[in-house]
Amino acid sequence: MLDFITWNADPVLFSFGPFAVRWYGLAFAVGFIIGYNIVGRMFKHEGAPEKWLGILLAYIVVATIVGSRLGHVFFYEWDFYSKHPAEILKIWNGGLASHGGTIANIIAVFLFSWFVTKKPASWTFDKLVIAIALVGGLIRLGNLMNSEIYGGETDLPWGFIFVRDGETVPKHPTQIYEALCYFALFGLLMWMYWKKNAEERPYLITGIFFIGIFLPRFLIEYVKNVQVASEYEMIAKYGMNLGQMLSIPFILLGIGLVIWAMSHPRQHWTFPNKFAEEIAAEKPRNPYAKKK
Image (cartoon, rainbow, N blue to C red; front, side, top):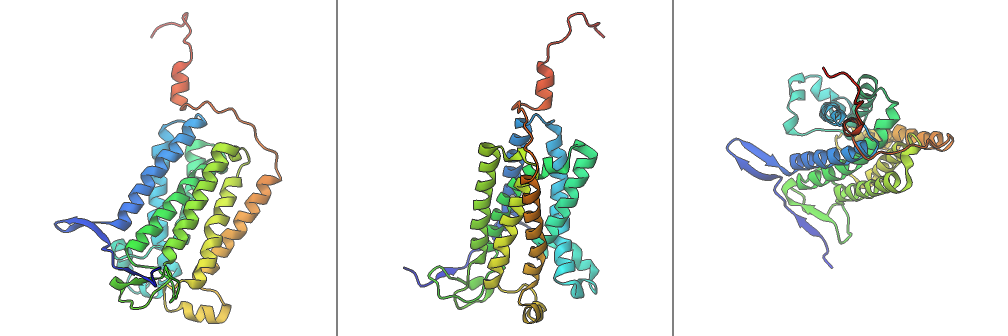
């Protein structure tokens, strides 16, 4: 077996002129495209209007980008960005935080539910989080291609030497650890929805999602390098870094949602497997109705 893996991937897939397509951006795009189709199947399965899909996509894209960026700014490097506010807009220089994206997406779903679906927010959450688990795994693979957010030194045979980042000793490929956890969670949630009708227990899928995303994140942080130097003081004081502290509320929220979902009766629904527009088009017209 190999003693380690030398990793020197180019983060740029291809470029043309001043523009470059990066693996990280491609991971984002592919994730959103696949996620759009997955949620679309669920909307059709439950007879929701097809037009809601495009609206939801707009809400989520904006929330993910803005929330992830502001999460990094406020949670990790506020001392820098408070003195250089123009740098906040330079998202292409890196700096996204999943906890900020999660908070923004929660807000976006509530707004989407209030203004668009007029349904309980759980109806949207229990579909959207399934796609988010897949997107999260793809984004971590994008982090791997960028040679970023990896772990500390290791002597395990799958340790990566991130040459592009100037490393000379094997490090934990924590991007792969997280990606595998998120892909496994995606499979579990898909099974719960399509095979066990778990959506009939509002917030059950969402609760499992929060636990399945943030508990592995909490544990993997123990072997991951800190993102900013100020976290060393936090670790010395609390025994946890910022990523772990931000994960705890989401883990507790997930546990609470699972308990709530399992303590309420199952809602039995009939699924038409057609969009609302298709159902309406198939309704027989009244032959005696006056033509306009």
